[in-house]
Length: 59
Image 1 (cartoon, rainbow, N blue to C red):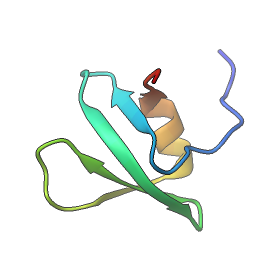
Image 2 (image 1 turned 180 degrees about the horizontal axis):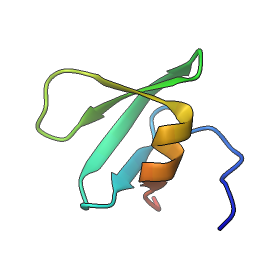
Image 3 (image 1 turned 90 degrees about the vertical axis):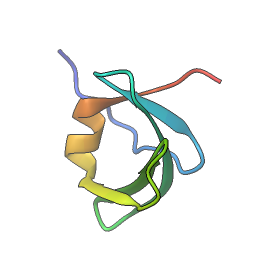
Image 4 (image 1 turned 135 degrees about the horizontal axis):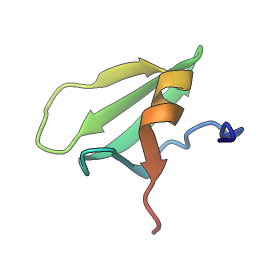
């Protein structure tokens, strides 16, 4: 398995293994800030974890 080399891109949509959709707001200091659908507060994860758990949704 190869590791993704690019960072998540703000204003793009990603999907986790459960099919839940998130919208990335920012990528700063090795942290990704995003919103889950139906959840009003931002979530923050390290870039490495985000890249393992999420895939970009084709637009």
